[in-house]
Length: 215
Image (cartoon, rainbow, N blue to C red; front, side, top):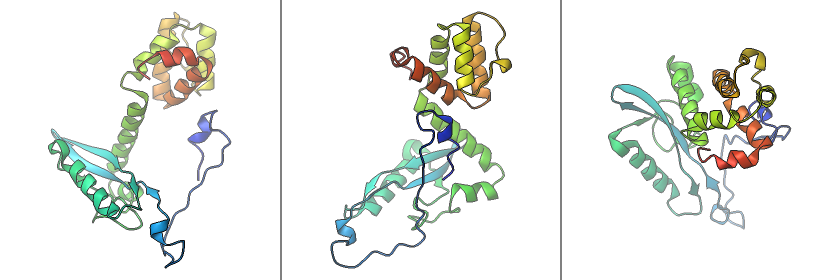
């Protein structure tokens, strides 16, 4: 599989990654390899579209199921149906949870198919990815990063910028560390390298990094 994302992080750089795409599923009959004897954890997922006070939004919904459970597909379908109507969203799933064996009728087979048909969907999917990143880092990650960086010297800030693919030539203005911290974080967001900046700081100063509850 492409390693573009993982290659950005020193902790995962160089690790081969791959996956299998099952086009047809044939379970052996009888013997020790019968499906009931080979439980597997699966993660059905779907893109849901819903309206929030006039705004069209996408949501990424997933579940974890154990195939050894008797009615795991029914349980998963019930969860997705409940989530669709939670908080009166009455959303519509645009993809079908299981791309190989669809769990319900849907308009698209995959997010890629959705993006190729709906010219506005790609922007919505990009916004969804941003929301996922924000939820992973924490709602106050930007402010916390500024506070942490403001405690470092200009040389440190330049090094963090270089390590996070946010060159100092694009943001350094020679001001105070507090001002330069804001410049660096702003440029990292603009270049979509904020996660790299988080990793660079966490790797070099883990104690201070852990002390910030926002992360």
